[in-house]
Amino acid sequence: MSAVLPSDAATSGAPPTAAPADRLDRAFLGHPVGLGWLAFCEFWERFSYYGMQALLVLYLSNYLFLPENIGNVAGIDSLRAMIESVTGPRKTQQLASIVFGLYAGLVYLTPLLGGIVADRWLGRTRTITIGAVLMALGHFLMAFDRSFLLAIACLLVGVGAFKGNIAAQVGSLYKPQDKRRASAFQIFMLAVQIAVIASPLVCGTLGEKVAWHWGFGAAGVGMLIGLIVYLAGRRYLPAEEPRQAKALDSAPKAPMSGRDKRRLVLLVCMIPVLMLSIVGNQQFNNAYPLWAQKHMDMVLLGWSVPLTWLQALDATTSLLTMLGSIAFWRWWAERRREPDELTKMALGSALACTAPLLIVLAAGMIEQDHGRVSLVWTIGYNLLNNLGFANILPVGLALYSRTAPQRMEGLMIGCYYLHLFLGNTFVGWLAGLLDEISGPSFWALHAGLVGSAAVLLLLIKLAFGKLLDDEHAKPAAA
Image (cartoon, rainbow, N blue to C red; front, side, top):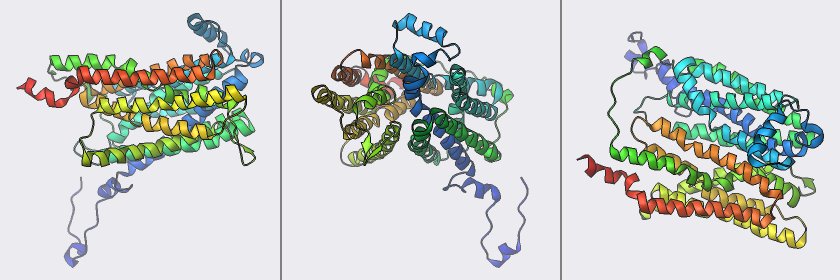
């Protein structure tokens, strides 16, 4: 670090010029300039991901998995045989929903492997770059029927290499005591929310109104832009710690206490309950577009609204309800005692279960009148579901982060995301019932599953609330 010499400005009373490093540290909304580059890169990565996801189940059901086309997909016979060995014979829509569910679930599993690869071998920068290249390649391979499964494999490996590691680089911009870290992740997530809203409007409209492959191509272009942004901003990111230095950190660790072990077991056992709490939310991306395609009036002012726009509506509602939930609990905390995480999650699940209950009413009207229902029902579903979901996923993340045994925070956060893997896989199987049972029964099943999670979370609170309460840990340590 070079010495700072006195200047004429110092003797004349003019304010000293900030050092370049200090300017860069606050150049982006009071944050390091690297945050701006990472947030813009994440915007394009999420744009590509959600743009492709908005189209996927419709593309499979309405085109690729139809009897006249499915034979063109390399390796599909082996995949279908593997799936049907577990589920039995599957129709076009059922197979499409299962494949979509497996894909949507595995994207929450592969980041665990991506983190290991970055930590032990390649480093975060190389791993993220490889992930971005694979994702772009996967989107472009979607343009060809034959390479569909190869495209999905590239996307899964790419997301695994990219997703967790870029978030870790956001954290590495700040020292441990820097209080800007929390707001940095809020800015980072805001870029994600904007992408989730924009991608169905662009990729979904191109895919539905022009051609499927135009939508997937737009997602691929978005990922290439994200890669260019990341490489351009790489010089603003902190240098990575050499992996040899990490290996030297082998100081002996204190053993876990009995309380920590009991907490660990409880957190793992809660994962199936968390899986039930999200089935209504995750089904909106799988079976709901297929149900809406058959039963919802999508014409607005004489124009047929693309089905993929429902995802943009959901993302917009999710953003607004998340902000509303934060404001509500702040208001509540000023007047009353704020509930703990388990209570909030139980209340969120109870509220979220009313969303599929609302569609039970709409499905009943369809069976009586044999007509189509208004888009207003989708707005109601989004509002109720997202009000509940705002108190499930982020609150659960806070719970696992707070209660995880020391030295196992990262592992437990990874375990927490397993409920999204299990939930999406389960939802893919549930979606296969759409053509097997009546509409009211299908959505009532989802309401019952989410409602059962609310009951189970309350029971866990009553039975194990003290175990998860930090206030009860202090006497034991005395």
